[in-house]
Length: 210
Ligand SMILES: Cc1cc2nc3c(=O)[nH]c(=O)nc-3n(C[C@H](O)[C@H](O)[C@H](O)COP(=O)(O)O)c2cc1C
Image (cartoon, rainbow, N blue to C red; front, side):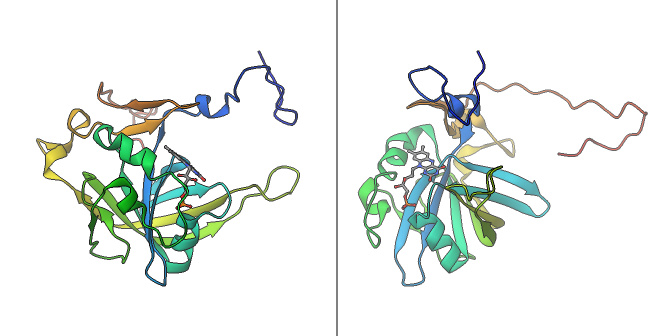
């Protein structure tokens, strides 16, 4: 099948778009507003986009609290969502009035960060402390602004629990990171295989980038 997205007439029971861009990592974003309110919510429009410096982004469909707190404070934390915390991830997606912390709603514990004022999630086995380096609303091809606020953060500090390290590597069987599929579906990463990257065809021995 093929369909164009200007009409979005796919004839399927649900829009398949997000089931194709999958699995998506979940950035479990904690923030603190300038007036001290704490916020926590999951974002699957989330990814790493550079590793020198280390940059991550999340995209908010409309200006939600996570984006507005991150932009006004200049900081956010991306906590790792895991299988063991799946129910809590879901609970923190409930709309809560500004000033109500989703940590309390989901029974999670705020742990202090080293370099940002936002708390991280004590129960999450890894967290990226981030300083905001930019935010923007992209335009569609018709020039009209998308219903999206993209927030980019530079990772300035990284927490890793010993519980997910094996032989010095973050071990997927131990971490069991949660990702978002299409529809109402989620997946857990645990079945991992490795492949060595090919060398350059011209015989150069520079390792492949990215
Ligand atoms: C797994 C998961 C992923 C989500 N990803 C996004 C996302 O990428 N962008 C978005 O705007 N909302 C996303 N949501 C919905 C937000 O988490 C939800 O609207 C939340 O209430 C936003 O909270 P905030 O206003 O405190 O930031 C997601 C929800 C879940 C459960």
